[in-house]
Image 1: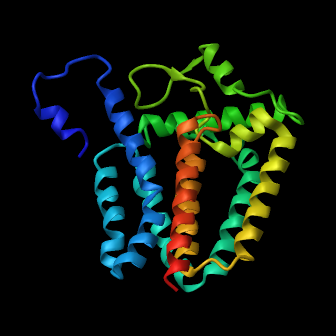
Image 2 (image 1 turned 90 degrees about the horizontal axis):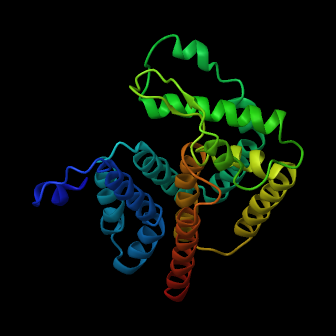
Image 3 (image 1 turned 180 degrees about the vertical axis):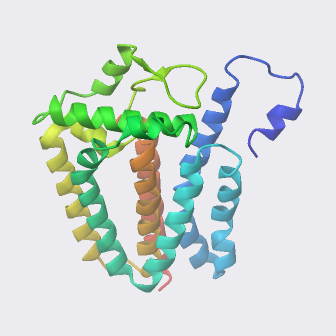
Length: 272
């Protein structure tokens, strides 16, 4: 609800860090939204109703729209489309998703290093300040990863060390200077290159490919495959624009979603 009850219930909260409540609530939507896809597969099998199965996703879409964090709404939209496509062509969609992840892992820092930040900023505020800041973060983290941290990376939490140096930037649309680097670069692939280097990239790619092969060779039912694909689609949006390598809650949500997919398989298998 965007914190509606908190806003209307006395006493009025005028604390200077009230906005952190909104961040926490939007993260709660992130955590729940990724679980919407296995929940849909489970509810569909139990109730036989697609409308009932999609109810949590629609509710979370409404909740996500109450916050300025667009990744939740975008992730639900993309994940939902991929969920539907997987029901029709499961192997093709899952194979394409795996290829997308591997290509993005390999190419993201090299593409982001070419962002023409100065030329874009010369046009004034063309996007919200947080997105303008992201352009700088992605470009600078990518340049640092390629120029200074190859081949072995600059070490875990190097982004946090950059943040600790306290360098600030001027961003169009922001009344105050913003950090050159938050505690993470808001892109998981860039952070892998920055902190873990080529060994991390290669191990990550091997894990992605091996996982995809195992899923494609499995006898998983179509609903469970759709749930897995939906989670992967939602996760890709998060990976590209907000996820951190070391935030335990984000990794735990993916683990919970995987558990949900396992429950979906169990239920669908037992009722076949």
